[in-house]
Amino acid sequence: MSKIGLVIRREYYERVRKRSFLVTTLLTPLLMVALIVGVGWMSTKGSSEAKIIEVVDASGLVADRLESVGTITYRPSTRSLDEIRADHGGTWGALVIGADILTRSDDVQLYTWSSSTLETEMAIARAISDILENEKLKTYDIENLDRILADVRTSVTLKAFKVDGESGEEKESSSALSMILAYAFGFIMYMFVLLYGVQVMQGVIEEKNSKVLEVVVSSVRPFELMMGKIVGIACVAVTQFAIWVAVLAVGGMVAVNAFVPADLMSAAQGMAGTGVAGMTPEMMAAAGGNFDPDRVVALGSLMDAGYLGRMLAVFVVYFAGGYLLYAAAFAAVGSAVDNVQDSQQFQMPVTLPIIFGMIGMISAMNDPNGALAFWLSIIPFTSPMVMVARIPYGVPGWELALSVALLVAAFVVMVWLAGKIYRVGIFMYGKKPGFRELAKWITYR
Image (cartoon, rainbow, N blue to C red; front, side, top):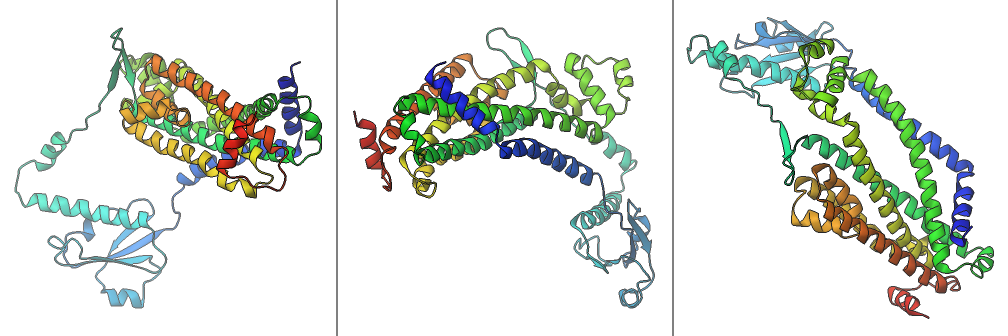
């Protein structure tokens, strides 16, 4: 086995055998699944408190037409507000509507005997608004106005198709799905680069303070040691990431089955192979018949195995390349200092491109074919985030090849620089170098 392979094996087994690794690997996805399921469960649960509201309507237009919805029950009242406040009789609140409500839409007050919520207040305001709108429309004295308005209301559903410039092939696209994938991939990239990049830096610092290192460097070149350490911790990251994906996939299936309507799921599964236009009446009937086909466009694309496979393959390439590049940069930082506290001044130049890449990712989602998105997806320090955000929208093959080639080249150069710094920094104890000093270390022969 090569020297780099030995270092990789040592780094990998040393970390995966730790109890902290096992606990973090198993506990983190379980907590994430519990959080997702918990949020989904809570979102399906509304307030169980019955809200009986006495309505004092001086206009005589609203109280009798308010319909009780959910936990809110309206009760028209002939009592004054003072009388209700003196004896509310177990009601939740009082709604006072002024006589000039048609001309003064702010002449409405809600008094409650317990805490109110924004959702409740918006529901009450919306109910009153609907009544007042209908009342104002009546003043125009148009026959069959309700039917006319119903006919006029039109909901436009836009289906987007991307046409290949060479073959002319049309492919259905979903900007909403592309944005979701871009955000998800970009966030995962950002989280793992920082998490495991810092682990590489800490590992280098720990070894610098170890007496065993003096024996190691006598038989392994700095470049080989840096490459082995970076790739070894990368293997740890891949192992942990694979376990997380497996656990989250199971948890995601549980959440989807629990919270996504069965008719929407059936329709989406049918669309994965046929699309909306290809769904037969029998398929729609099997899906329950009661659904809007346009709601399942994105979900149907999401279940397209070919589409997901392409997105995942590109993501893995940039995930690995982005991690390796920034891990090498963090290794260079760890090579220059003796402790984590002294590394703060050098971490800023490393973390700033990551943050800039996240900002560029948002810009790329708004304009994936613009000049800014192009250059940020080519520059190695921002391409892992920005190119991943552009991929769902479609990227020419030559841009993808150039971006990957530059990313790999930047990684090799960064490992070489880290080895140069490590070669000198290993013998520097108790000294905090500056950027000018690091430049001298790199040029030492």
